[in-house]
Length: 107
Image (cartoon, rainbow, N blue to C red; front, side):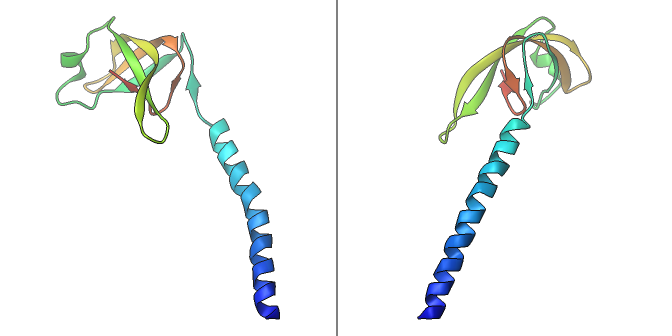
């Protein structure tokens, strides 16, 4: 009986110690996210079939979406203006509205 009580006490102690560590790790990850704001230049990758030049033209303005929440629902977070093409699948754009994070999708 003493053994069971000591095992539960040890598990409770470990839980009390582990919870703050996981919360701090989540805060550190959130603080390390890269956020780009209006005026910044970004490089975007076109993952469609064919060349990026076939799908997008210079000076096009693309809407940027982010999937937010547990049930991913795209929400508009900004707009980017295409400046130039870097290679067959990559182009350079300037943020003209909103804040863009890594992993956002421009359409």
